[in-house]
Image (cartoon, rainbow, N blue to C red):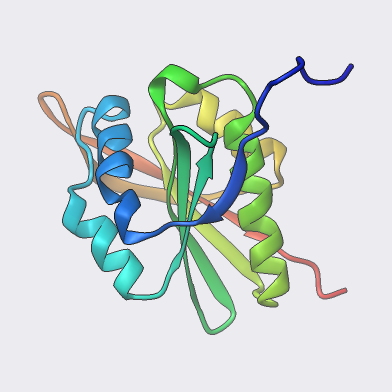
Length: 157
């Protein structure tokens, strides 16, 4: 089936400083303990891969990936709370994986809350495997929540 007539297909593009307010707003709507605007600004200045999914009128999602030597780390991959379960997370994750392959990295890491079942399913379907647990990594109501550390190993071909 094709898209609805007049439907806009969101595109992935590089995050710009002018996107920071919208990205921060998505982060605040989606997470109980969001990153602040300064962290996103720092990621741009550090020249990490910072991309957004842009509908043409609004930002839907974003991803931030750092690369150092032969390893990468997905620091943040977020779909606006109001736009989840539409395949946008998969679209951004595929982009991040392709970027990592292009950079010839061997491993791509990330942390995820054990309570975020949808994200865990997304990552495991994409070939991420459990590497371990970081105790008390995330802020949570009444204390802290552990993080599952996942890794995607790239083949040498």
